[in-house]
Each structure stands twice: as C-alpha cells, then as structure tokens.
Length: 189
Image (cartoon, rainbow, N blue to C red; front, top):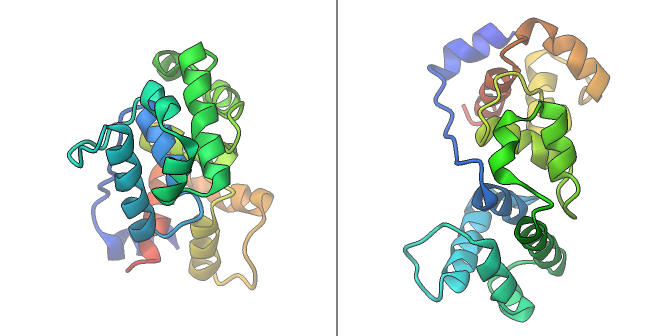
C-alpha cells in the first residue's frame, strides 16, 4: 500500500526546521489551522515581536513575553494560543524547557520535556521530533492526516485507532517518520 504512495508521490523531501524555540512556537500557532491562515498569523506575530520587521520569522522567548497579550490577539492568535505561547516563552526563559539538550534526549524524554508546556501535547511533540530533531522513526498516531491517509490507502471503513495504526505501521519501522511524510503527501496528490 505504502509502496504505491511512494511511487506516486516521488522522492521524499522533508523540510526541516532548527530544533529551537521558534519551531515549537510555530507549531503552537499552526495548531488546528489550515496552512495558509496559520502562515499569515505567524508572520504577523513574528513581525509584532520583532518590533515591526516583516523580514524575520524567528521568535525569541523574551520578545514574546514583552509583547502585550492583546497585541498578540490582534495579530490573530486565539486567547488559548496566547496563553500557550507565553507559557512556552516563560518555561524557555526559566530553563524548564532546554532546547539545547533535546537532541541528546530519547524520543520519550523529548515528549516529556515538551508536554510540560500548556498547549503542547504528544502530537506537537511528534511534529517537533520529526521536523526539528529529524528523528527517523516517529509514528504520529494522533495525526488526523496520517490516519486519514491510512484509511484511504488500506481501504478501511473508519480511521484507524492508535493501536491499529501501530500494527499497520510495523513494516515501516525504522522509517516511520518518512512513511508519515508520504502519507501526508498522498492526501495532496
């Protein structure tokens, strides 16, 4: 099933990000939004915290904390996302989240480190593991797109539950991250 998707989609070209505050802050902004809308909001937030510069896409935790919550809301963030972004910034500044140490941690340790931030769940941690830490064997069992693509590719009547997805994904190991990427792409092709 996956072989047909790989053949149809073509070579894998995952776009990676640096494993830093900006990558996780971006994940918060993008949660539950379509890519175009999320990108517009992210650019407005980045310009706001960069003092009006539209050239930067990098966020610094100190700048996020200095930005008034009402201005972050005016940039398009929900009240919940403002809370999550500020919690991430506070935990980064205090050292509770240590981005420099993440590459040396196991996947489970990274998930534990990141999910202490309000608004960061296992799904966001999985995305960080795949797209920032470049971990090769992350199966995003909670991702709607992955589950939808598996349902379609395997002719299932319903979205697979996490345990069923784990079973189906057995042959993809140790390259589950690449498999997820192909599954996402299959929904576009």
